[in-house]
Image 1 (cartoon, rainbow, N blue to C red):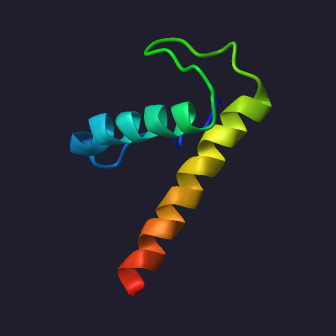
Image 2 (image 1 turned 60 degrees about the vertical axis):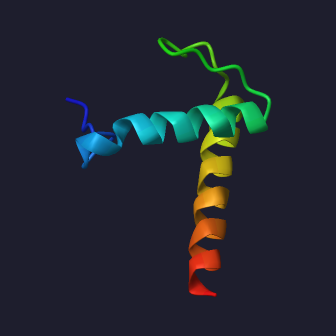
Length: 65
């Protein structure tokens, strides 16, 4: 049985998170589709997630200043 931890805790934020993911994908040159993206390589998926984390950290750091 798989443990599913990828649920959105605040359902109202789902659209914003999806838009953030699409923007991050464009920035790293990965073509995401709105539906199934199982054909992505691990490197492509990792670059999207890594870019998202980088932007979140930068945003947090800006908020500290």
